[in-house]
Every structure is written in structure tokens, then in C-alpha cells.
Image (cartoon, rainbow, N blue to C red; front, side, top):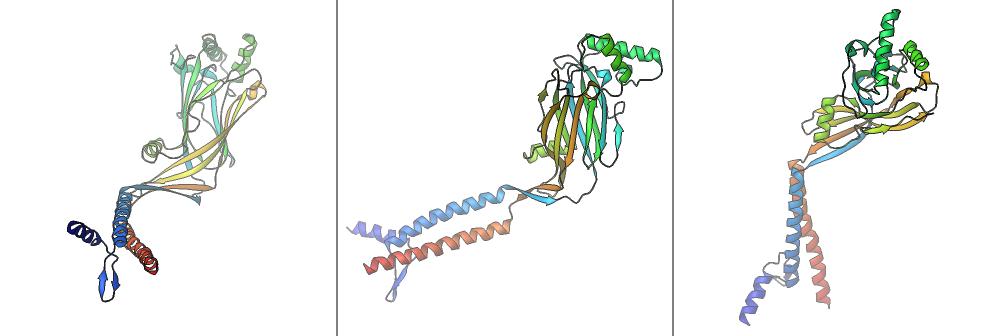
Length: 333
């Protein structure tokens, strides 16, 4: 009996919600129970708040983009499995009148490939992969023979293009428009031949590749390269592929305030039947007037300290009120 009384008296000593009864503070069993429960919950919340201090939060905001018509980089990697590499032209145009033909520029690289995408090499390829039709009939004929060899061997082209453009709506295009003489000669000499734009889009990215790799590794959010690996097959009628891209400027800020700017985008794809001279692949893009801002933010020590103090004080105050009501109701009974 004495041992039980000693146990209960020690048990009641946990009560931090003691009440005055007369001139003395009285500990209760209910107060001890509330104290133990409050302590357990407070420790859990305290540890949870302590853990959040070491976590990095990702915050995103949508803002109006005031950066103006600055330039941004475009990176394209595409496999055209049945189109002769020598005939491929590439040009870009925007709504403010910039019209640039990149076919034979340093921004474009062509690689001859087979149907599996493996790179092949032919004689004179360095000369004729970047050839421009001229008034020299002999050279034009040699170019035609080289192109015909590509067709007979069923070789295609891997096209890699890196260029910059002004941040206004526009388009860039893959076609064979720069070689009308050779094209007509091919259609006349090779019966039932059709220029086939079947392709795989390996990579289409807007912004700097260096920033993209950092964003992928550090932030792991954003729709940076949604068309990677997309395959599109040509058919008998619909010989014009149109990609409609809505580009959204995006800035990523790390914990140290460094920022990386890339351009997310969404895409819709359409195919049309057009005259063979107008066939090709066109990427039409529009620029959103808004800017998405992603930030990585570390926990603030003083904010977390205030929250921890609030947890301790708030929990014991709330439970003290509940315990007081419980005791009053019990005494009235």
C-alpha cells in the first residue's frame, strides 16, 4: 500500500499544471497525464521544426517579364533518316524582320547516317555537305551525283544546329529550298522518289546548355526538353511537319543568389499536305510575356528559433487551459 502511494505521488509530481486549493498548490493525475502528452507532442513538433531548418525549400512565382527583346540560344539535334544530307537547308525568321540562312554557316553541323542512326563517311562529303548551287554546271552535276549516291545507299542526316535569336515570335525551318536545280533533277531522274522527312527529335532546348545541366542536377523541376526522343513519320500525303512552341522564360535562383536562365516550353504538333516544294519541318515559336521564378531558400535560424519557442509556449498554454476546464468539470460533478 505504501509503495502504491509512493508511486502515485511520484506520478502526480509530473504535473506542471498545478492548481491552488486553498493556500496550497495541488498536483493531479489528470495534470500529470496532460503534462506527459504535451511533452511528447512538443518534442515531436520541436524536432520537426528543427529538421525544416536544414531543408531547402523550393518556391516558385509568376512575374511579368520586363527583360525586353534580348537574345537567347537555341540548340537542336535531329535525325532525318531518309533525307539526303547534302540537300538540307536551315533558316530562321522572326516578326521584326530578321531573316537568316544558316545552311552553310558555322552554327550548323551535318553528319551522314544510316537507318539506325549510325554515322557513315563518303568521299567528297566535306565538299558537298555544305555546297551551294552555282552557275558552274560541272560542279552542280558532281553535287547531284553525290546526292544521288546518298539516295541510292538510303542514307540520311544527323543535323545539329546551335544559334541565337531575338526574344520575339518567329520560326526556324528545315527544308531543301536552297537546292531547286538538284531537287528538280532528282525528281526527273529517279522515278517515284519522294523527299521523306521522317525524323527523331533528339534534343530541342532554349537557353545555355551549361545552365540547363545545372538546373537538371540542382533543381530537378521544369519542362526543359519535353520533345526529346520524339519520332515523327512521313506518309504519302502530309509532308509538312509543324511544331507550335510556347516558350516561357524561367529563372532559377540557388541558395547563394546565383541565377540560371533557361526557357521552358510546351509544344503542339500538326501535319499538313502541301506542294513538295514547300515540304519540310517548321518550328514556330511564341514568347510568353510572363517569367517563372524558382528559388531555393534555406531555413532562417532566428525564424526557426521563434517557431520553436512558439511551439513550446503555445502547447503548454493550450493544454493548461484544457486541463483547467477538465478539473473544473470534474469538481462540479
